[in-house]
Length: 441
View 1 (cartoon, one colour):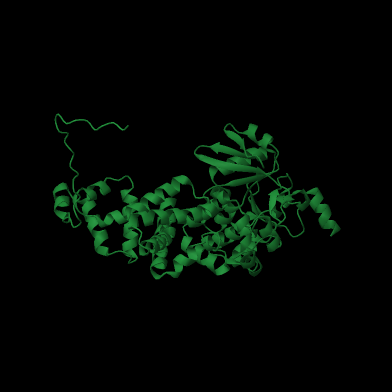
View 2 (view 1 turned 120 degrees about the horizontal axis):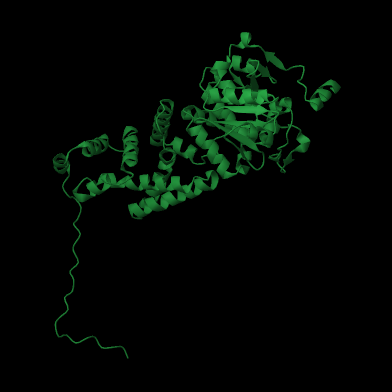
């Protein structure tokens, strides 16, 4: 214990630290992005330690191309910035340096301390502030999962593994560093991140990592809504959203994230609709196509909106006002928890409100709908409804043909007016020479 304490104080690696040479792991420097390799080389030439760390190393070892690169170093931000022509210091709670090289931005962070005595926590154990510079070993100890605490030293091409991450990757296991309950109390979002990473990487949650999640799920209520929204967006746009949501349900973490998701998935039509929406989103993400978060959230919440509007219509309310009130109710519930941005909710409302208008295929109403700026997204939503069996396939086929037809064909496709025609109000003609109305006394 004394030896361990001395090593921690002096910043020395522990006796269990594994240093693996390139000939044993096979990860060559050439596989690192040129920008990240250059940042490491410049820092090393200036006399500092610099390693690629986190998701980039993990993904490279799994044969996945990293989206971005993080560098961890013993240099302070004010020492890093002057070494690069295009670099800015960002952050208030903990300063980072963003180094821009070509079109790539590399994030450089200083090793941080994992000393529990220096962190400020709330009454539930959630860390509010713990931004203190430290050693590489401390930096590894404060990371969330073992597979994210592997450092790649660009200078020697060696892997430095403090917590058995390499062995866990080999076993395809995701394991939290330290005591799971303590780490989840420090940051409840780690539970959500565990599910996302396990589903994305095809890893199995370690039993000790998985076990506390169900009874600690209520801690998610204390996460700021904006942060929770960001994490949910990462999960839904990970390319593995279907697997993520299945995993959320299995570990008991879905309640409180999308509180209405259980209700949606209990409905036969709703379950098929959501499953199709997630499958299409995953397919687009994995093929590199753009995805609209507004469309995805609109799909996830649509059947709750539909159920609420039908309940109001059954009580005698008119269909369109009932739909508008239902939209307000559902969005109020979700935005209070997830902080969905106003820009997204505005688009969601447009897509939902346009769905009843697809029933109108006569006269000028069909043309006006076609000219709407959100027509394409609303039509894709209609196609999803048709694929799930919610609306007739014939309705989607008609609109698919109508939007691609020429002017004459469109005119021929229009259905005859079926509703009562609005009566024009006659204007009263003033009689010439008529006496004005008497003024009130």
